[in-house]
Amino acid sequence: MTRAAQAIIDLGALQHNLRKVRVAAPGRRVMAVIKANGYGHGIITVARALGDADAYAVACLDEAMSLREAGITQPIVLLEGFFSAAELPILVRENIVTVVHHHYQLEMLEQGGLNGALRVWIKVDSGMHRLGFAPEAVAAVWQRLQSCGGVSVIGFMSHLASADEPHDDTTRQQISRFNDALAALPGERSLANSAGILAWSATQNDWVRPGIMLYGVSPFAGQTGADLGLQPVMSLQSQLIAIHPRRRGERIGYGGDYVCPADMTVGVVAIGYGDGYPRHIRPGAPVLVNGRRAPLIARVSMDMLCVDLRDQAAARCGDSVSLWGPELPVEEVAAAAGTIPYELLCRVTARVRKQTR
Ligand SMILES: *Cc1c(COP(=O)(O)O)cnc(C)c1O
Image 1: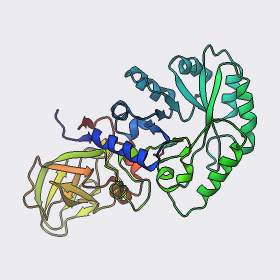
Image 2 (image 1 turned 90 degrees about the vertical axis):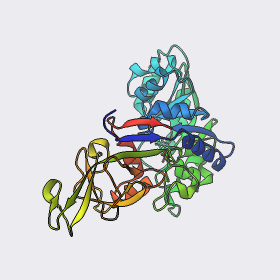
Image 3 (image 1 turned 135 degrees about the vertical axis):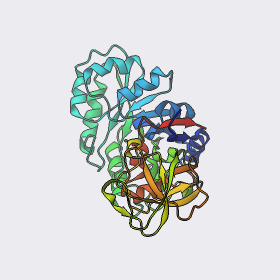
Image 4 (image 1 turned 180 degrees about the vertical axis):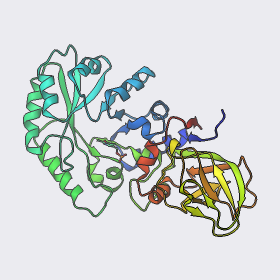
């Protein structure tokens, strides 16, 4: 190991957060959403830590296969379904459940040739208008799938567009469209993401699909995971690799954007946008040096960023730096970068070593 940039993944926190899901949605089955490399935490690591989940949900077959190749045998659901008929025999062989969200998928299934049982969820568009069959089309889709050899329908899934806004009427409308469309159809139901689980108990149904809350992060703006009793799973860390006294008026970093307002001490941290730290974060955003806040200064570069150490006379080269984690909520860093914590977590790059704890 040469470079200190690392993401520490707290397995106990993952398990704590899964227990919180069970408390928030008692009696419901849990489909743990671990797409996009487990929201950047490492899909295999996360799957193993969440072995108590009733199923895993990923975006696509490649993600599911990485789990199977690691020896993970639990049910896996493909949230975007399959993209070509060539995937179908693999889904059957690997016991992977798929979403069916579009007519082209239905037609592929009707062309048949499945030699085994394929289990599917029908995706309903209850108002997000991204994937899924219109509510009025769902009964006919269900009927056609009944006639496909080898296909069995588990039930119906839909996704919430605005559940993170507790006063938005969209969610209420989605709930009633979903329930009305399915009133006469048999099968299981799944509607809730993390925000649904926490803010809209009427969305919990048979299966809940938590993603971000499993990672200890809040789905709601202006609240942290800790505010919700969750424990942040990822700590993104590095270290100080240089400390320099600078004169008033000296410029720092690319473009010389930062002009020292006084004689001051500047620290250089070995982490940058090449590790997934957001380049467009606002100046002054917090970074923790030895557990204490120091403001970020100058442009974030690929491998480094700079901090103002005027309040940290004791800081030394090699000291530890935290970019986010339990002591510095990723929600706060995301807000300073004009994005959401989901994006920051997913964007941590392969160069950052992942360490479990
Ligand atoms: C990503 C995803 C989820 C999880 O959403 P969170 O907001 O992370 O809880 C649930 N369902 C579907 C269909 C998804 O794509």
